[in-house]
Length: 304
Image 1 (spheres, rainbow, N blue to C red):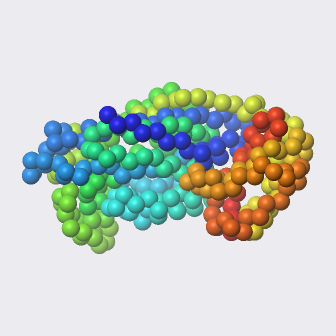
Image 2 (cartoon, helix red, strand yellow):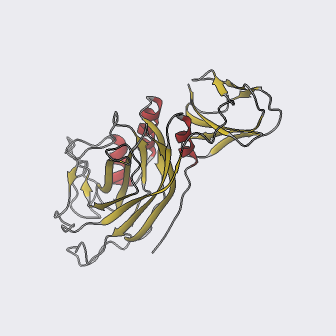
Image 3 (cartoon, rainbow, N blue to C red):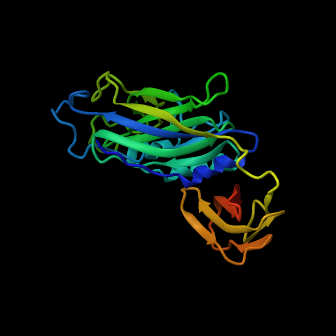
């Protein structure tokens, strides 16, 4: 088995909402894709059988990134056909800007047909309790696995301890190829996303299992109520100002939507600090401010 872990720094956005608990989950996709479970007409799976990165988002019910029975977005099409996530992350960024998502998830890939993909420390709040994940069945014309808006909260509003889902192949409806290595043949117009179980080359067996396990729950009382950190203007263009009403900050970090740190400031920080952001591209960012008592405040930023 292959176990790969990935820490999502951007999930710190979950700590922004006061008055809510935050929950951290570990996600494990166990692939059972094999010649035995999904016999292929040629007698063998492709020698290059693998999975693209397991990607997704946590979000609310005002947005859905795919739905079986509806046509695929460009982002979903690119994942299913190419294992390319750029357009999908752009769709997530739009949802973040509209207040309907709090993070994108950029998990690892798996270089074999069978094995594990493990994503550690996906953290979210009660405002964004839904989880969507997708990965390409590769190689293929437009086949994928996905879970659509699975709620991490139960009917009583409590965080679920464990969720286990059988996963079956899906046809994105964007390519008419009938075999793993079929030449590109665009479906025009697109067909709806459909369950592909029992349709060659797949059997009616599941292709894997998605297990979502609760790791930790935190309240918001770990942040000193007397400490207020504000950022303005937001949205911004070339400069932002960070202001705190009490304890001095010792570290200011800015991360992009994929979790990469793009700025780290540890010197010349006062109770009102201006930062030149002219070198940042337009988009959504996370500011993480740490004060001298090690309280951490996070803010979502939007650069125009």
